[in-house]
Length: 299
Image (cartoon, rainbow, N blue to C red; front, top):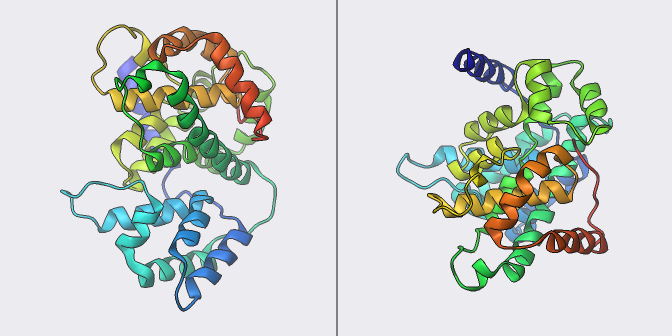
């Protein structure tokens, strides 16, 4: 029964992610268009703008990764994607998006997820630097330093599957609004019960369609899971992935995007993995608030 249920969830997730459309911000589209039309475009400024918009980043990365051969390593860097495509193809893609993308200013869940994705990504970049200073495993060289590009892109697209859920299920936005009021929920379980699938699985399929690197896709799939940390004292097979997973779970806690119930199940395992304390987490939360990074939860 369990295998059949999981198969049904995957089939439904494939259905709802078919031709899903992610909205982009009108001002960003206009500024990107202006930069790309200049005689000698500033590629650093352009990549910075694209990184700040989920729709543009997804389109650029998908186009670049699609052009690579099967033997070439998939990329998670917007800057590298622009280099792979070249200025002409990048500009043509941006122009196509500019004229075909819905430039709605309507406040809805999809637009909120897109905007929150950038804040989550910024928080992840901030935490990578902070955790490297407080965890002895980084200081003694036992844990690898994370790729900042991979960290940013993983965090940016964590909740992209919610956009597909909202577009397919009419009552999904109201469902999320109700869920937010209860910090003891388990979002994935609630989605599975109500809709037959969940946003993490949908986001995983979307990121696979964009041909993002496997670690990024897997982080999106597992960003509500703590099973990896069930036995933190044992040797971890994929240390880099586990480190990034732990960072993402802490970010989700700091930003209130996982429930108290979920955090209670994973907290001790994550603290043990990084060899940090409850007080360290409290200090990170206080420091994050002082950094004036918005702490608005998505659920």
